[in-house]
Image 1 (spheres, rainbow, N blue to C red):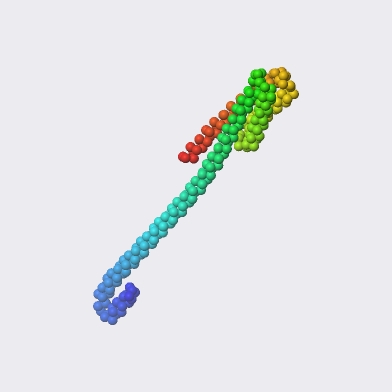
Image 2: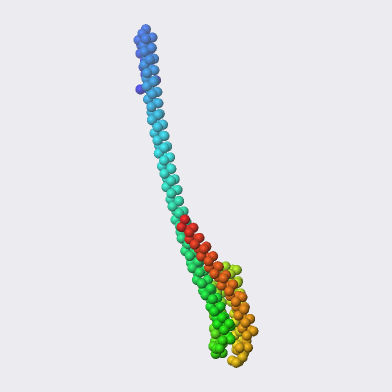
Length: 240
């Protein structure tokens, strides 16, 4: 029964009882207000309850959405970290391989230049010593062969080194190889008893070797130190 039904019933009673209608009407008005207030309060409570429930639902939904976003964010961050870790590991591996290759090449080239210098001293500087002419020719041949072998190794490996350094070393092997070939050819032309007469060619060849090889050795040393420092710096950064 709602408010409208109650009022209709009360009105019917008032009409039927006639004279006492005023009192009853006042009573019915008071009773109607009480019922109306109760109904309004009940509706208000229901609305408040529904509103509170709606707020709770929204809050739960928002919290769930935030948690979902946080999980997705954490997942994406972890995925990016893994990808960066893989890239970093790949870079370090490739850098380490390149570094090892370059160090090995520089070491070999350095040793070759030092050996060329030693062979030049043995073949050119000490030629005036009392030695068998055949030994002199044999040393000169070995000196030339070592230059050719070292130059061949360098040309196969130069792709790993800096262009400026490559050009300088290439020039050394080319010029010193040409000098060694000329000196070897000269020894073949002269008779055994005439070898001591090759002083001029010998001295020119020795001076050319010193002029070319010594600076090249310094260049290789400097390049080796530079890549060692660069490698150390790269390794330190990768662990930060």
